[in-house]
Length: 306
Image 1 (cartoon, rainbow, N blue to C red):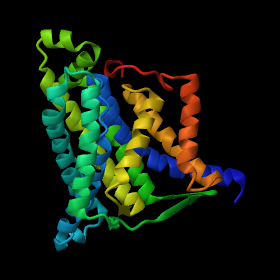
Image 2: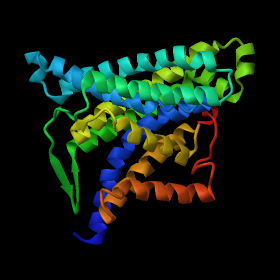
Image 3: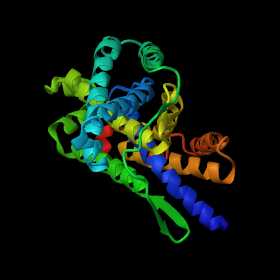
Image 4: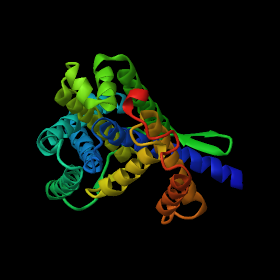
């Protein structure tokens, strides 16, 4: 393969994982845009979503009518189950871990978020075990070649699902009453409260949506790599947070762009250096960008400006 062929192939591979990073990054940026909290437990919620997807598949595949239908039949209920549970988990964490500390100094909720992260990580290890779990093939992977570039139907499916969820969120924030309330809270929480907006309810919805998207990302991650582990949330969550910062923390379109760019950088690092150095390459590029543009590529702005 020529250098151009390798470049194009790695870009395609990077775009796929970048879509997953973008979904997870949206949860970070939504929460920060509204309550200025970095939810470090978000990566573990992503892993919970992956394990729930595995559990849902194990249960549904025992039903012959569903098992014979392939991905088109199995994937929707698997996604709904995973997203629904992680959404409720995110709301529960917000209600009992973060809400009591909302008016405390910023170090208190940040420390709590780290504590919740370790709590979830160890709970997953105890319940599911420390060994890698094999994620089933929900669909037969088929390769499609377009010139020097090879893309699979699984990569296309991940891209379509991710883009669909991203645009659905963008439309929700822009056009719904709750979305407008989120933008109002991001602008001025006290003024929004005086205008009659239920602050606690809106923040809970933000955690619900962000955690649900992380659950979807977990299922797609498992489908793509076919293996999951309880500690996957640390590195993937860190990359998704980095993607949010890269695009501009608090900026929803920025999280999308940052996630895709993070995946592409990782893919190029794996292609031109090695898989062992791909993380170093991606974070090195991030450092260079933030040295010259600390607010991120699209600017660190609030949710109201999407």
